[in-house]
Image (cartoon, rainbow, N blue to C red; front, side, top):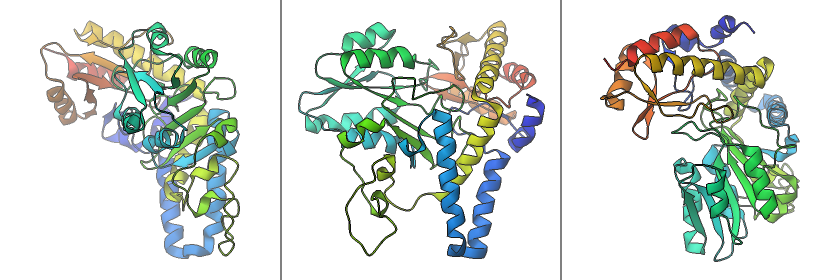
Length: 371
């Protein structure tokens, strides 16, 4: 792969060393062009070309299925990760005394929807997790669901989805994956992996715009969830407006209640195609090589790496400590010198994508030096 040529697809590199893909990623040229194409066509033709865009959404659903190795019908488009989590949190047939288990340092999107179930007698157990054994110890006979991030947003820890999913299968517990910090960089195969539900917005590692994301549900669980947010597009005969027949779609499409965000979905599809054309394993290898390089140079420069860099636990997120320095101050200093980084949980967070370069990383480390 010619990584230098790939940089041409990301004009942000002309101005910035961009290392905040765990926050909001810059758009690629294909995603930008998709948005412009949609806007231009709607300006020139309006509804006259509606069929073209319906077909485009179908194509993006196929690409999303390829990304997850899922039947495209098991993928619904959502506006963000929170919406996908909420579909399960609000739709599951909870009983008083049930509980949900998660990690203590999950992102709020994967906490608040479950905390909101307290009024229905459902407990959220937040585990200060060090290993899979900590999760195992929190599970009991009333645990109905384990919900975890693929990659933890603040620490950068990549969870072992296979091991966690197998643990759930052994206990008869459902497994929800908030995949926003890993999907697009690390392979996910829902046909092989014991994942029941998955949600991910597209504006981080998938390199798409905000407001367009993916929700996956294992087919056999569809009828187990009450369909919330029902609208005209939730039913089988959605476009037969004069016939009222409340027969929900027999797949994930029932959760797409109304008119879709066609512009956002189209742009998301353009970036998914870009990543698939590169190859997700190749993207993964590149991102890990970049973060390994960063950790090596940062350590030599006197910075403290907080994130685990053990194989299988490392990710595209590196959380680090600059001794004696306020991370907010250092984020601002980086911005003034042409680098975009972020801070979470009182630590700096650096998150490169595959188009970043080793040379950029060397320059970033010089800006981050504590002295």
